Image (cartoon, rainbow, N blue to C red; front, side, top):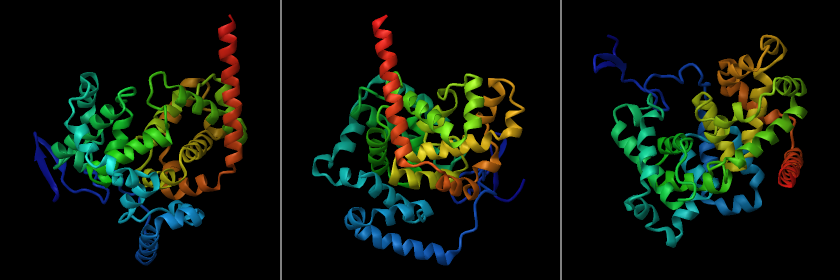
Length: 344
């Protein structure tokens, strides 16, 4: 048995974690080398920015955005996310002083708490917080955060896809902070994503497909000819903010940008993945929807690394105007379809 391993229930399990806290070292080999001096400089810039946050956001938002795109230093990431998504202000609001504690103390609706309980073991079981030494603590905190949200928002309650979001937040910050970040993400950034009927995610799927025609017309044509609905491949990407799809360094970089710029980051990432996952030589090996969907469900590691993916996302030739135009177009199309259905 190698050093740093131990026997649990008759199996040899590695007790060594990588820098993200994953026991199996599953992020090994995908982490770029970081120059310590550059990291220190970025940390000091972020600390200065956080100390003058309101001023920066009002007068120099482009600088904040640029620094989020470069990647937030790990030492300040949690504080930065709290500021960027507005959770810090929710927490500091006197009206919310005891909100989290009261929500945790509430009974909660049994159908939601039962579902949350069932899903706890499914979230990042190779992370030390949820499947390692601190498993009971981590799963207990995850239950508290998800139950608190289901009590705060009883209409939507709990959706399975919220669990990896809450888990990722708990890997980076204490439970009350994670809760308010989750509230901001669910209610402000992606409202309606977890509502019954999932209309919001279906609309965004249609917008994504419309934008794909501009970004990669041949990929768009291929998917359209095989009648592959966007909902079949993009649902987990968007609902879980790529937390279940990509290597951890890429996920954190996407969240850095998402907390600053919002949902448009998800579109940019998805468009790059679609474009790079289905080049001509791959499309030729996909005679039916099953092969194409298999490629999109099991993205090649080569296109998912931080070094390749993030620069491509930033370079993507798609503007906010393009997104807004496509959004209006899809809304109009949906409205026309509803009117047609109503008139039958």
